[in-house]
Image 1 (tube, rainbow over the protein chains, first blue to last red):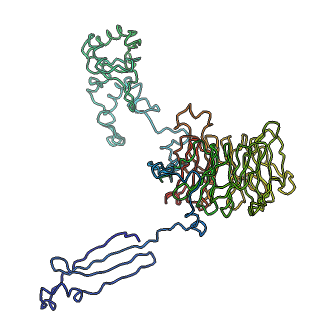
Image 2: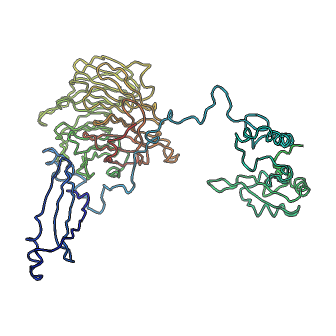
Length: 285
Length: 328
């Protein structure tokens, strides 16, 4: 018998009108007379049984207690007559001398699951191809060069910079609605002063490759500091293992210092490895 | 599920067998002593001492009174299940590989390995009801083609009229158990390409499953010997089992024993893989062994199965409730 949930107690506030005349002292003994009898409903086809009881709580109030119980037959291993008899067989062979301490049988402490090769319900076909373009039609289009790549990574960005600045005010004047059809993030919105503010990360950035695994950012800073003021040092680490991936970036405040560092350190032996130092991004000239 | 680990053997397991009621589990290993366990809690009931070599195979009679074991000590022995006493010994001149009682337990089929100048053979013995009447003579001996190849398994066909054999030559053969005539061989192109390691019949005997070192298991029709299904896996299959309850087949294996010590156990794929019998699709794997799985058996009620590994452990798994509701 398994108790699934033990019940809900309803308090019934009832004026003790008639029974109030009774003496307080012998009230306890007469409880069973004053309370409705115990009621049992069920069990129904699901084995759910309801028992309704009444009693007084310590404040003297009458309380109705409904207990819902589900009775489940715990599947008892159905043993055949012979199997039941075999259960009582005497042990023989080496099993006789087995003492409890050196048990041959133990239950695994590890919970073993039936490991599914894939999550249930998902199949290869169910995975939708992300916005697959129909018959070679591209859905990525660069705003600068109309090529098949994201605008932000356009290799010809700098070439288009000037024309764009001159174009946009014109379109704004003629068709104000048209320019609003596509959302342009604020950082990419054309502005007159944009040519002056260049992305900070690209500034005089030097790429250092063939670093040894033990090289950390302070080491790199120490190495590059003699050439000039360094604004940023970054060593790429593997996301999972936190081991250096063998390359990093150093940003200089001045371009001349960066060039100096490249000239000096490219091919420099550092920690048993020959460093390769070059400009980080290919610069259009 | 929390499997029950049974450490009764010192050496790799070779075979597992439940009795018909599913309350006893018999285990054979390369150590010389088969064991019998209670299949519900894994308690050891007894051991059968007397063999002098690896025990390759066993079978238990329908009423669970007799056990037959085949061993590399060139003998097959009949045992009294309850007392562990030897009842009879069939002596051969080469190791015995596979044994099985016929329907009705009046006959037994025993296969022997090629040894010295002897070729592999299938023997049929009469099993007497009273051990006093038991004789050692074979009523039928089948000499197989390509006798230098081992026969890894021979079982009775429907109504004991045929014997199905499979082994190292990767060919499944059906023999007439009366005359000893070779009735059928499987089609070469649809058969296995490497040694067949195991063969298990469905509960009703209408089809059977073979596992092979060619990393596949195949389901065959018993009467026509036509290929029904193929289950592919990543490692050689040493043992197969078929669920009597659900349409599941289980393949056990792992890399060759020879490579075990040189590779990480995680890479060995030492898991019992469940496949849907009909869709041939993998359902899941049960891990735990530290070596290849050599033996698999399903409880006749289909609610538990046990696996025996090269690591010397038997792992008895009682399925969780949700196993029975698995959807693909």
